[in-house]
Length: 360
Image (cartoon, rainbow, N blue to C red; front, side, top):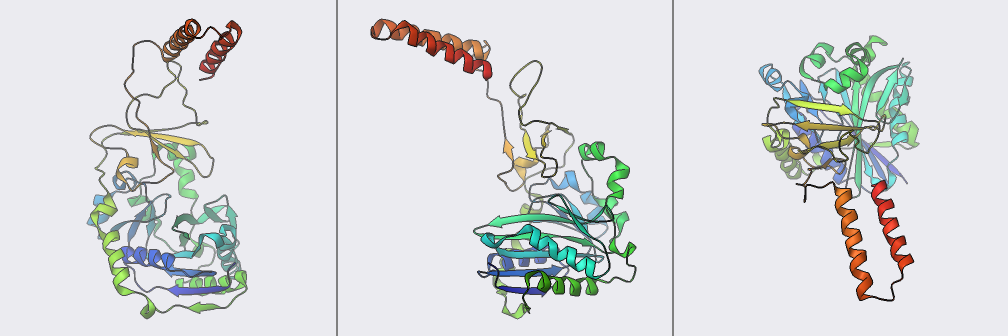
């Protein structure tokens, strides 16, 4: 149960240092405590923990324009940050984690400013049917955080310039639909500023939790520990992983977890990545051909991603025929050596094996 709440409004705009502080605040959050961290990144693309940088972002253009690429701890998709965007992070112990309560802070803050807002699904917060906040989540060693964006006056041209949404997403939603799904809050309230939004977030935080929020001081943080975490988030090994630019990629949406093909019951060989959509709960299969490797193999691992490689066949016969022959041979070898084995149990055993093979 949350008994104390605290907040910190950061002045730093370095994405790697902000991500380091986000992790630090989460790992050091006290029991029965929820902290709200408000922060901004300058001219940055932030990708999800399991994404391939080259597949999600036009990295060359971003670097040429003086931008920064960062990889966060949480999953989800790539996002563009600039000084027209306010980021938030709720950090608390996993046992006290309450997503709907945390999202209610954002909704309450917007409504207090005269902006209608509603929660949509698990990841998005909308106003007038358009998305202005996307959320992601992370949990580790009994501590969790829920973070996200608040679009106030983001440069939408840069958002489309640097991000490269997958062809599957574009085909399923349509290019025009993807562009129309996001909105800046200043389109509804032109005089809205970052400071006003931050103040509204702190007041809504206190209102939703019914507690007075204490302000955290940067001087109380462990600077050496934050620097150590910064070094990791700033390293190329973390930002890019072991992935290489993709020359070919393909993806397909399926309506069922079970793989089905007209000619075979096993999936084709080669590295594969299975993911499950949090919105429509449909899995997606992705594969990458040489010289690129699958993002699941190159980015930091996640329990939501499983890599499957088909082993070489043990014989040229179909698997069902091979197992059936093995079953009959085993039953035949039992009868002469064990006279007490009756014919009926053996027949039932064989029948059950064939029945299971048919199901398989």
